[in-house]
Length: 74
Image (cartoon, rainbow, N blue to C red):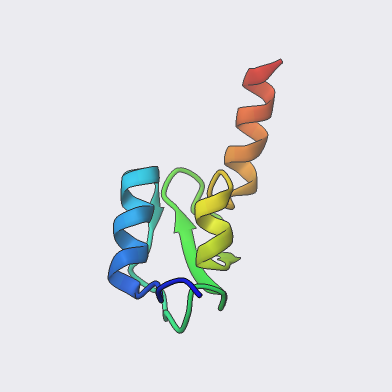
C-alpha cells in the first residue's frame, strides 16, 4: 500500500504541475480520492469539483482550458 498523500504534498505536486493556473484557497481536503472544489484562474466562471488524484492525472479539470487545448491542436 502506498503512502498517504496529505494536503501539503498534494498542493506541492499541483503547483509544480500547473503553476498558478488554479486557485486552491477554498479546498477542504479529506483524502486523495475525495472531491475538492477549485477554480481555474483563466476561466473562473464555475467551480471545478474533482478529486485530487484526477486533478493531477488530467489537464486539471477545467473544461474551457481543455476546449482551448483541443482547438489549438487542430
